[in-house]
Amino acid sequence: MPPPVFRFAPSPNGDLHLGHAYSALLNFELARRSGGRFLLRIEDIDATRCRPEFEVAIYEDLAWLGMSWETPVRRQSEHLAAYRQAIDRLSEQGLIYPSFESRAEIVRLVADKEARGAWPRDPDGAPLYPGTAKSLLSEERGRLIEQGVPFALRLDMAAARAGHLRWREQGEGPAGETGDVAARPEAWGDVILARKEIPSSYHLSVVIDDALQGVTDVVRGQDLFWSTSVHRLLQDLLGLSPPAYRHHPLIRDAAGQKLSKSTRATGLRELRAEGASPADIRRLVGLP
Ligand code: GLU
Image (cartoon, rainbow, N blue to C red; front, side):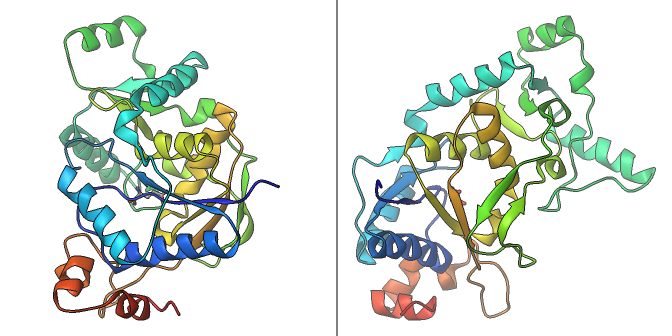
């Protein structure tokens, strides 16, 4: 049997905090204990938010924690053609359509819907896409694209006919879901898979990279538990075999809030500047 493959996949859009340290160390140790491989992947498709200095800081912080990883590191921004190809493949299956509403227009459309009754929200609490772009005629689409109107490429959830997919969960979801979990991709509505200026999205590139890199075990925070539904669907549509998943509890601050990249108090750099050692960090996240 080939060795299991684990990965830590941060986005370089801020400094790492204790939650990242926990996730990275957990992956690293599960790999070590199982004689597996450990990969680091830089999820930097969003050029407007990612910066090279954050990427350098990620390498420094992880090395300081005592971790090492295989090189070369996969940087998503260097593989846009692979994501574009997947979009083409979904498009050929008739599963993708462009929507042209701006964010402000979408907010207004949702407000209209909500004024007339409840409008569904996704597992993260965001309203589902309320637009009607799916029914635009192809000449109209062509005209808008030609005019240079920005667009998002969406997955036509109804056409994708998800409904029977499951995944193997070795950790736990927010309500204790574990074992053989039924995916519910339709709960996300017509998710965005790419934009005019970025030919991919988190959902699309994470699925392609995990498959291309032969990742067998995805170990990540519980906040991404229900995203796995979309990932299972994309794996199914693109003919990729699914890894096993282990979603771990999130590290929270003293007030019980999820950590964010902008909360200074729990940033690895700040803790280190205050004299914390790698052993202190392990203690703070509850690792032996
Ligand atoms: N890049 C994602 C993040 O930083 C994590 C992706 C994943 O582990 O699936 O939140």
